[in-house]
Length: 204
Image (cartoon, rainbow, N blue to C red):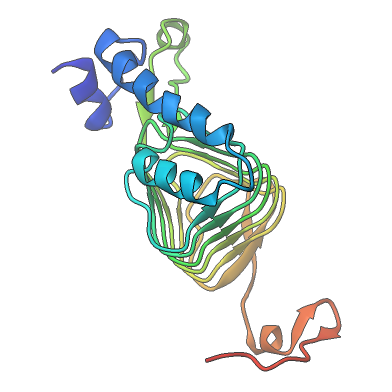
């Protein structure tokens, strides 16, 4: 197998392989162009995102700067994804993000890792494991999501969490390592923050 084939198959591989680097550098050029755009260039941003990402749904907004090992080539976004400043995605493996996902500032989503074994690490050997983020997930500021993790739909990941294992649907999870704190409940339909009541109509 070539190193690129090993990369796609999720096997150990050398990320400094010439074939891989040539393709990767081409992707990074568009990412750097995207990060140079200004708030007065929304059409240019949208066009670049269509070229950068493996898939991008309607109504997506990514606030520059955005960083990704492959410039977003292995990132697949659903509809109405919002990401605040400094989103970093190590997208050597695939990262799947569902619809209506909100991502706070300074979040890292990593699909790439290195073996614990010293001699392989000294050679820069790498492996990838896909990340899945379900529909309607909110990822708080400063979170880190590690390779191979799945987050179930409708869940909220508290700010600063390190997500090392799968998180089920419909929960609030927080911490390092991130753990389920509670289920999302009927109380959440009445209070938006501590004891502050929701004073507007909630759409169906």
